[in-house]
Image (cartoon, rainbow, N blue to C red; front, top):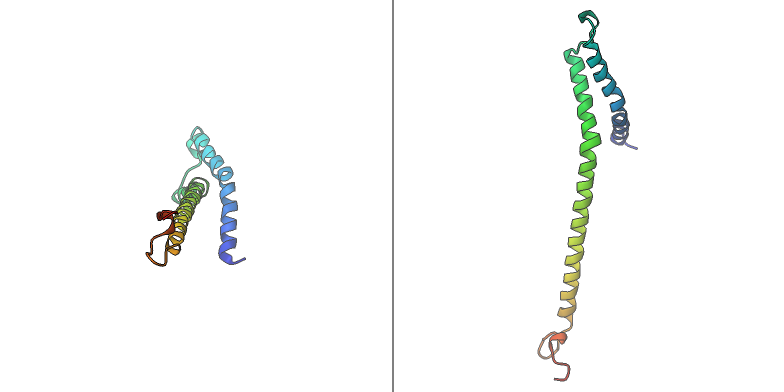
Length: 115
């Protein structure tokens, strides 16, 4: 497995663990606001940035990625169906094109059988 695949696999595992890390931190901060100022859990800029990155990563892997995957599946199915329909139409045209009279070049299905 290449290093990119390993990182992607590891990041997915981390993303599944993120709610269990971020939500308790937010809860701890909210509860600490009830304590006296000396005991409060302060959010400094690096901590805030870290929590923000964790939340964005969680949003990406848990909300956007499944929607993108579902959209890709629907789009690929639609394209496959369109290609299949076009292939059937081309097959019909090919059949019509190969079955022509040697004298008048009309397709056989357009001619009268008795005439």
